[in-house]
Amino acid sequence: MLEQHAYSHLKQQEQDLSLHLILYSKPGCHLCEGLQEKLVQIQSLDLALDVRDITTRDDWFQAYQYEIPVLVLVGSEGRGKAEEEAGAGEAIQSSTLHPSSFIPLPRPSPRATVQQLEKMLRQYL
Image 1 (tube, rainbow, N blue to C red):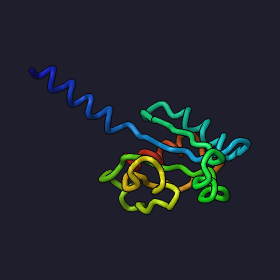
Image 2: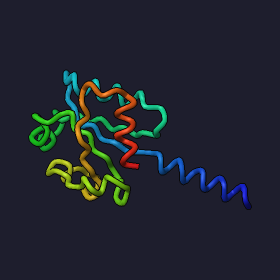
Image 3: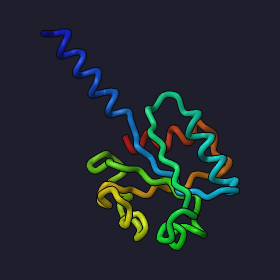
Image 4: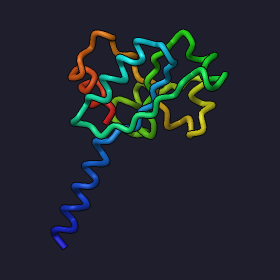
């Protein structure tokens, strides 16, 4: 029984360290590619990364053509600092997922290291 409790506690901790992110991007965007490469290098967080090409949907393109890369956190209601920065945009709201679970994240500097990006993302756990 104690082992089962410890296992379920461990599984909960693993879930707490996971983030589902959406990266709005487009082909040939070097800033987008650089951010994606850094996100993939983060080892200490369980990241589910969904890269969306804004040229495949007109609503995404209209909303983000001058804004990419746009990084959005999904499914984070009630998680720390994420609530402070709530306020999803129109294109986020038109996505197939429920818009209240979308939190636009601040755009990291292209000069940010993998460690700095990881530190920023940890604020949203």
